[in-house]
Length: 273
Image (cartoon, rainbow, N blue to C red; front, top):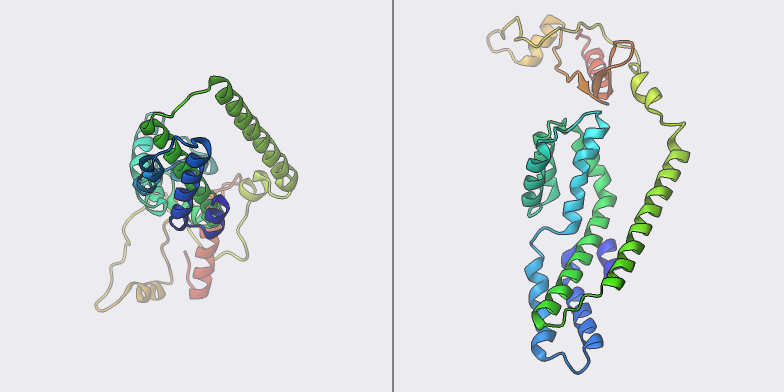
């Protein structure tokens, strides 16, 4: 069931499998005690819980503090409550709708949403895996509560919790060790960000101290491109702290992916910036 959810990338198709798995669990552990009503309970609880926020979507909100770390920013402590409430309510919708809203609330450049989409090709599969686990666990616990068969074993719960915590710590240590050994020397922040320079030959440019309106208005029946070619100058806005797209390196030069494309555009049009 869980493997199918991971491979298919869609929890909806495994809902019947979750229902059958819970029914099998009931028959196995309550032999002779499970009546028809208890056996049919999962048929109602699984579709009932499906639209509600699940663990997979909620854990995906971790992308917001990661984005803040990526840009070297800090989220204001007072904003965490707002982000948590909006994120939980937004978990009813698709993450592709909620994440841009949370980035805006946290005042994080929304360019990094493209990274979320790329990483989501793999991460969403784990999200579906967690959602299937969430639905299965919710249905089992709810069925036990309503049928009066819920029993709490403190010793077993503590042992399982300790085992899960140990596996989590080991996973973090292993992943961190692999990343450090694989990328520490090839993809250092010092080389890729702080010391980055413009790629290729730059166009002639001037950086204004502040944004302002274009000093020369459009002429009659003239569009923006015609004005650019007539003046020989293209005006391009940028974010001074928008790593890695536009920022000032340690030498004080404006660099970044967007800045590289801006210079290439100016060279193609044969104009200054």
